[in-house]
Length: 328
Image: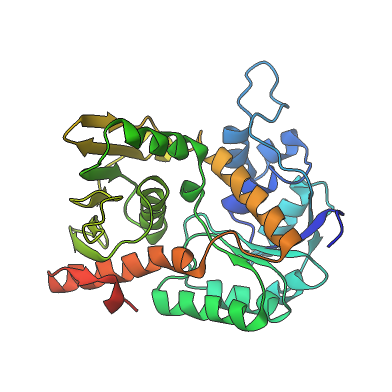
């Protein structure tokens, strides 16, 4: 396609819609700060104490927010107002995929249970589509979204910000200091599937994909997960522990540790103050995807977090280790 701006249809106007929106569309920060969910988006994107109108997170040019929809019409109207009234407020989510170049389905804290329905119209129209994490609430539904995209020969991307945040990449680059890594641990947010998928995505980012089996225990769903890479020498040989139900944390921060016979290394916080850099990287990936017509991630890697979650649920129910091949 030409180098004109990519027209975005935003299917949902939760916090993540505004979080990503302020990094790709011009807006009035004073309006952002004063309206609804915009206050939270403002807090992490405008950090300069002596110039509250200067965006301090990365801005990714080349997009225009063309359409917005939300099941709450007031939320959609508010989002349009934040972006200067330019986005058209749609009456149905189906309209959001008409005459756009990218369908964007944001999801801050949801479980992804509606994503198959929301993604279907755009994919059927062969509009490149981004689905925020989780891709769906279970592996079967996630596979259905991927299968539809394949049938329509339409690029699809679904990622957590934790899969792209550069602060995690810099920690990953330090693993060579203590290689070979024998064991890893991540403190992540618990209580929701969204939080667990964030933690799993950070594990993919730092230690890599390719999980073979999962153990799970704890007082809540997916509270404590042990990921087994099947003895791969380029992965933690004793596995990786994800502590999702591990108490409060500073501004949603996650923390990573790696251990070996050579010692241990520990990350700093990877949280709300770092997430905008992960969001910016996703926007850059989406720009490339729309221009090239190809997804930057494989279907298998996008499906793996849900395969781990489904295997973890079964492991927690049965009290045994569950192979990812049993999931879904």
